[in-house]
Amino acid sequence: MIQIVNAVGSGSLATEFDLEQVSRALGPAAEYDPEKYPGMYLRLSDDEPLITVYRTGKYIITGAESEAELHSVRDRFLTLLSDEQIPASTTDDDFAVQNLVCTAELDDGQNLNALAIGLGLERTEYEPEQFPGLIYRPVDYPCVLLIFATGKVVITGAADLEDATEAFADLENRIEQLTGET
DNA sequence: TAACTAGCTTCTTATATAACAATGCATG
DNA sequence: CATGCATTGTTATATAAGAAGCTAGTTA
Image (tube, rainbow, N blue to C red; front, side):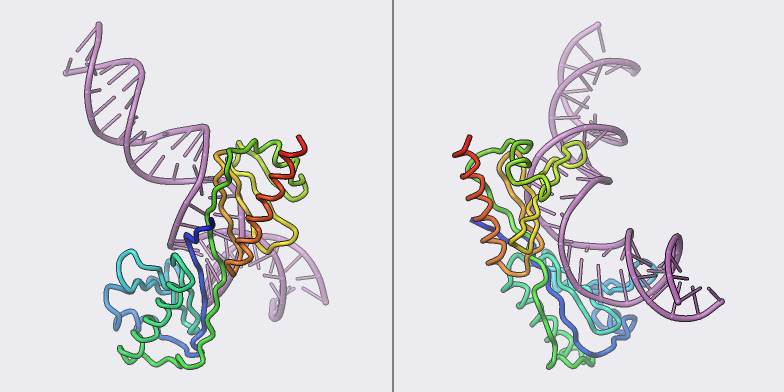
């Protein structure tokens, strides 16, 4: 079973923000230090996803645990702006999920050296001295999988859960084929 | 020299290794 | 009380994506 651990989304409010002013209006929940980074960080409350707001009106949300939470945070962010009377054309906001980081687990531990050959050396990267996981870039799915010797897997880069789920199912099938052959 | 492009910064999150720092506890 | 070893903790490594802005390098 695939579990989303981090969902990233972005939107555009088609309104320019004076971040200095906006961060003052939002209080301690907002953090803005243009010397360090051009975006303003906003957290609706502790342990909630981080919203990074830009001068141009674009923003990103990171750290959500589901697509639903992503939309919920976005809705509450727009409500907060209107409550604080911060001008923003929230009506024509285009919001989209950009990346889902998921975890999954294979039934067995894996020999990563053998798996790199089995999946194809041109689609895999495995340098245990650099990083303990095998990096697998499937041809048919828009995501990258990190496979570990314990059997744990991280699927990242997919914008929808179906792609991540199918990519993992495909990996399971390929491994099954490989173990059947040898 | 001006314009453009590419790469880096920040942040989030799981995963697992090594290398290191810092602390805890026991033995001489 | 000091030294040694063990454990815990932090950092780095790598992956993806969005964003703005800076720098470095290339090209016309």
